[in-house]
Length: 134
Image 1: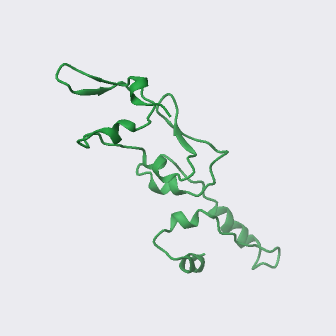
Image 2: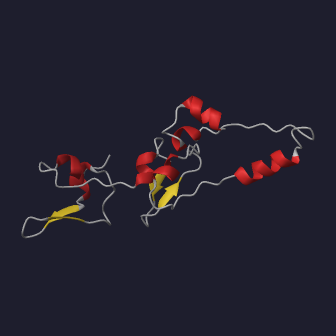
Image 3: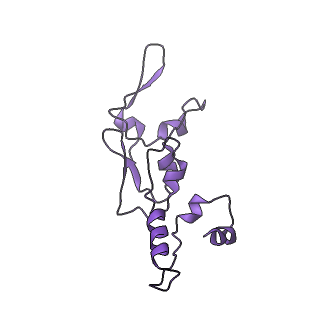
C-alpha cells in the first residue's frame, strides 16, 4: 500500500491549510486516519461502499467501472446508489409472457428461480416473506 509521505499528494500552503493534489492521489485514505482532528471526511461512492467483493472501482477519469469477472450480480450497488446511474436489467415482462404462452403449464413447463440478489433488494423482508412474494 502507498503511504501519503511517499506520494506527496498533500501539501500545505503558507497558512498551514492542507491541499490534496487529486492527480497524485491514489485514494488510499490514510490521510483521514491520521488526522488528529477528524477534519478530513472520507467520502466514497455509495456503489463502491455497497460492493462487498470490490468489483467496482474508479478509472483514471474518476468514472466508476464494474469488473464483470468479479461481479456476482447481487444488486447491492443498484439499490445503494442514490442517483440511478447503475441500472439492473429486468426480465419480468419476458417471464410474464412465457407464463402466459405456456397455457397454464400445459404447453410447456415454466419454473421460477430466485436470484441471489433478492437478499439485497428486499432487505426489509425476511426470507420466508421474500419466497412467498415470488
